Length: 118
Image (cartoon, rainbow, N blue to C red):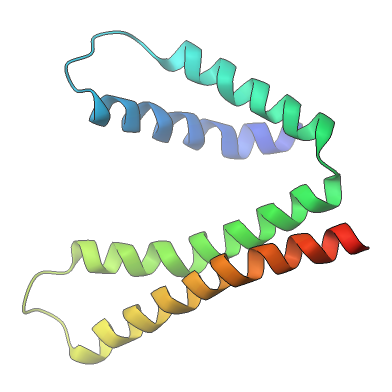
């Protein structure tokens, strides 16, 4: 659990803070302390009340589908310039995005159900 906080916590807090600033650009308040408290409480709650097998299954299924398949495809779509690149790259990114969505939507519940049953 402590390793999870060190490796995943910082980017999670940075992303949440950036999202809050993007949602309300006129806000001058510093939300970092509140975000750190919320993430800390979530970590403690998840660690205390959710079975470790289910937590690891969720982490693996969500991390694999989003980190390895969905995000690279979305980054390609976001960063490519209109009219540039081949149709094959676009098609490959689209297939990658669909495959990641299938793993995310279908694989995550199946993994959690298998962890609950065992």
